Image (tube, rainbow, N blue to C red; front, side, top):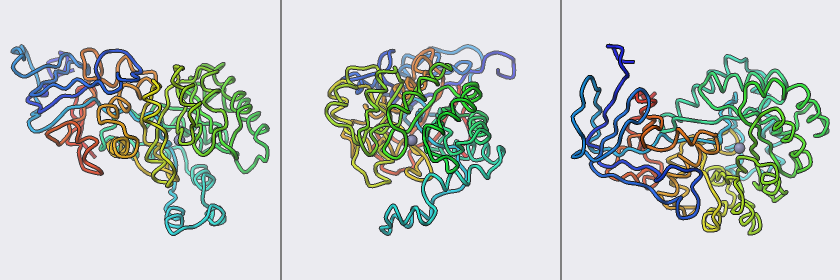
Length: 411
Ligand SMILES: [Zn+2]
């Protein structure tokens, strides 16, 4: 509300360009993925947190009453970016492991030096709930500075009742969309994955389901197999959670088929997905979430993005922000990787990290477009052309962020 008690209005005027995924549906696939509407010399009117209108400056009619103005000269507007896959709730770091890996250490050597997911589990268990809230808020500020106005974050570094619940609570308090990654890895106090799942589904799920919107599982050799993932996900679905899977990161274990069978929202990673998985995804409603920063960070092959889009699969882009395999919170950098490594156009990349990512989070009706009725979450790019979002590799492209119609101070 404004000082006079009326709805708060903001006019962003004289924008060099305004770019938004075309149409209204979600998720966008095939040629639709690359359809972005671009207005030159544009304005965007926000009213009470929602987009009230967009258009060309010469079509802007005089506005009655109080309106705050933001000068958009030399800037381009795109929708607030949506990061639909992060592990932003963790304590400690893995910089030692990173440095060892960079100088050629083997997996066994990293493990012997105390690296891997379990080192983050130890640090996260040792942190209190307040420290986890501070960590999520800090990571959320990093993301905001890179233009992310909505982020999902997963638990999965607790793997015990207390820390999993504290993680989900911290994600919510830190402004994230919470996903219970109860099946991330086998914690040290269990030597059998089925016994761990017995515990997690009996003790943790009933309370995690009150805090999280979705459940996620790491389907991989050495993590959880398809039978275990099915048991976990069916129980989570029964508790009202939407379903996500980490699948085909290193090897194809059947995660794509399972995602389709169970009606999951997404299957994420797909670096190892072959032709069969590509065509199965294309015939399904499951979104393939691509994480090129993770593939880059680990020096792994990139996912078959072009083949997925050509076959008609719905894809989204996300950072996979985490301390071990993708210490990267920047969706603009992910868009650059999409354009340079995945052969996606800047337009396809924009749709993939806005409306399609919002669909993965069940929010495509209100997030991911600059169109009437959508949330007034806006990124103003310090660029004469909106495609600098992908073009300016590692650049400082974000000039200003507006959340729910209010310009925010970038931390
Ligand atoms: Zn992940």
